[in-house]
Length: 218
Image 1 (spheres, rainbow, N blue to C red):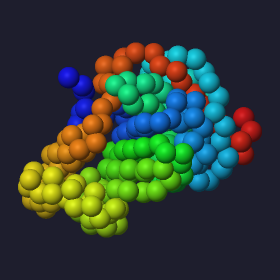
Image 2: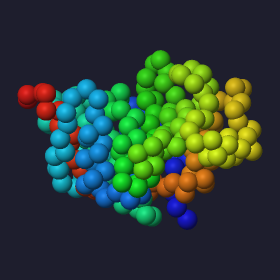
Image 3: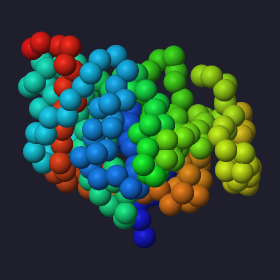
């Protein structure tokens, strides 16, 4: 039995501020980290390894390097159940493009992101890129609070996902956002076999990197 991904819907499931998780098949951790860095939309970023760290230790490393963890961005990376994963820490909010190029070369890449403390509020989002194309994406609250609340992508896959959501009684504007969030994650978990090892992410040291902003001189 795997951990799945539905646990991400819990409050502060990984760290204060929300979560930014990338799951990939067909990419190693070094390539995944480099492709995430290449998707930075405001400046060029390079990957700087800092050893194996827990989440708290990476936040401390960001504090030490930048004076405030929110002024830097770091990733912890690993492999579990056939998935390569990357979990972001620090000030990752709005820093990266949703770029299907991350999946070029035949990879499958899933992006899951939630700015939990954003007061606008921004809903959790899901993007599935395959071999350089976006094949499925939607906001996990399934509403129009931030852009379009509809499932988009390849018609056959969209129909499949919408059918599975309908079985769960979604969309439903009367249901609490957190319940909808958890339910949609469960649908994605089952449809795509997505899993993220909770105990490892929350407790174990993992290979960690800083995504250094080359336009900033410390």
